[in-house]
Length: 125
Image (cartoon, rainbow, N blue to C red):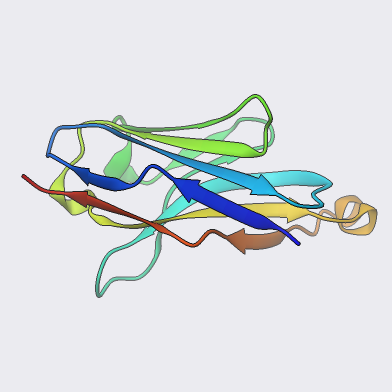
């Protein structure tokens, strides 16, 4: 059973910083990609940033230059450093991981997607 546990959300003032963390646990054979999505009220969930096992990163245009995604030394942990936050960054942030759980799915490169429970980020003065 795979679990993604997020932490680090909260209330921050415009222009401030916040760091989100996500740790994946369980019987994981390998990791394809880990990332962060967000969903604001009334809007669709959108990709914020993602990082591959080879450390290739991808960012939404709206956060480029302000947010940084990185992986921990254990490689099953991903961080999102959020700087110069804006009110429009307010949303529930979800950790996403595409994982290989068996040798068969690893060999076929068939990763399964898992989600964290979400953490609220509110940017307001």
